[in-house]
Amino acid sequence: MSAVRDDDDRRALLTRLFQAAVAAADPAICLPPHLPDPPKSHADASSGGRTLVLGAGKAAASMARAVENNWPDELGGALTGLVVTRYGHAVPTRQIEVVQAAHPVPDAAGEAAAGRILALASDLGPDDLLLVLISGGGSSLLSLPAPGLGLADKQAVNQALLRSGAPIDQMNVVRKHLSAIKGGRLAAAAAPARVVSLLISDVPGDDPAIIASGPTVADPSTFAQAREILARYGITPPDPVTRHLAAAVAETPKPGDSCFARCETLLIATPAQSIDAAGEVAAAAGYGVELLGDDLEGEARELGAQHGEMALARLAAGQRVALLSGGETTVTVRGQGRGGRNLEYLAGLALVLGGHPGGNQGICAIACDTDGIDGTEDNAGAVVMPDSLTRAAAAGLDPGTLLANNDAYALFSTLDDLVMCGPTLTNVNDFRAILVDPV
Image (cartoon, rainbow, N blue to C red; front, side, top):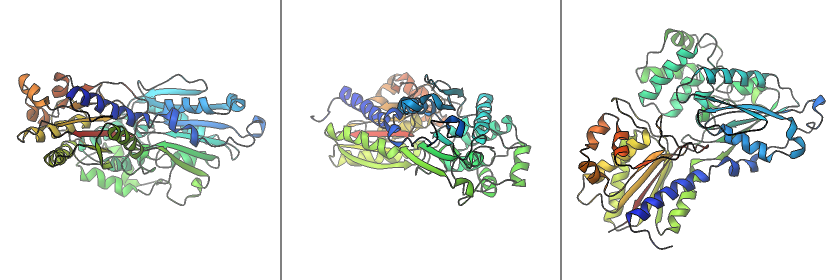
């Protein structure tokens, strides 16, 4: 294929790159090869050998459907289970119940579903198989408070963490220590059953202990660390939370605990795999491919500015290149506007490009959450085109002022540059691509 040159072609290519990244993490494709063998005694239910499917996350329903569609036909009638997913992310299933709940701030539906999931796991015996389907968002959806805490306590802490700019690994340390099911507690409840967890990673580094706060894996973090994280970000939690963290009773199960003796954890989709898939599309379109990393963190607008400088350097060097990256940035909320981390990233990038003579020419970009929802808005992300700032000025918009108010949504919605695809039913975190075309 010849090199892409005009803006319409490049906009279309940006969309294809995002679609390739999402397709690489489609549970219908990535899950079936990792299904475990059914329990040997499964055909005789009276002797045990049940298979129970439990799960949580934005991809939980599509993962459950993939299990149903690929489970051995002769054993299909014995398959049961329950998964919880975000509102709007459900799909029809036959045997596995799907419950929808709130994300990123938990609600009563998630609390009730998590309680049922824990109870179902606790009923398993040594001949049974627990198949656990975990994807990003599961931490908020499995919202079962620890004894002595209420849902309102968890909601208050979660909202404060989301506004603080804390990275996901630190947020999940706190969440584990306020939970009755996360941080390995689901595996402890299921013991001595065999537990196989299939994970779609949405966290930098793909650490199973961080993905959905690791309900079936050992937790190396502590109550003391949870207290320190809240203090670091100036968060004063409700009194019941303060007392719970100070008491530090019933620590999460640690590496080496016997409850994990029959647990197996498999990563079935990762951000790196999705970026590689997008890179193949970019290469076929005539671009050199430069991978900036699949685990990038930090303040979204600052990372966007850094990547803008990189793109300008490649442009000055006459390189036709696609700069690809993933990870999970953060947004420290100080204003009153709308917009997720991908829009803040793009606004930061656009401002850097606009600050250099000719910087807008020859560079365009896309940044989207692979789950189809950027933060709490209705868009997956947006695109920046060479004429974005020119169109913004014509519309009377000041991108810098909007960004200072955390209102990047107003910028990109006015420009009609939002990417609107709806829930993708998977989640391997953010995908970002910058196309550099020397002019």
